[in-house]
Length: 193
Image (tube, rainbow, N blue to C red):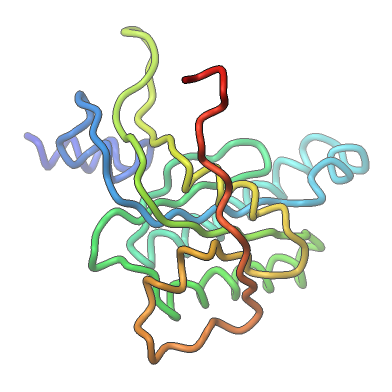
């Protein structure tokens, strides 16, 4: 029965929601990748809604395909953004994973005229079920996701947080077209003390 439910719901929810901790919240280590259409606002002004929908469907599909092929968990599609999470040690970032998203970005930019930003970060998040009893989502929150989200706004680079290169083997060179940025400041706001 559990396997049938997994097959039925897999296209609609991320792998993490199907892995048995959907009803509890837990802190987990994560590697997060955010892909964003940076010229979304201009596309919205220039195109009719049906044309924009087709374009965004191609973007979502290409990023989701790269995410699933690299054993990522597609957390969400939201407007101009796709969030992909990697939970397991076996899915640690590597050159092939980063390269898959560089290839997707380059292809979407060349073929469709999109301007794509890719941000990556790593660290601890809280993951689980959030919302109301009648409508909820399974997602993750934390500084790594915020950091990757902000880095996805950087122009013409694979924007990696300074935490990410430490996850590569020391013999691995920095991926082509990647730049290192400082981690987003995750210190609590003074009003939260």
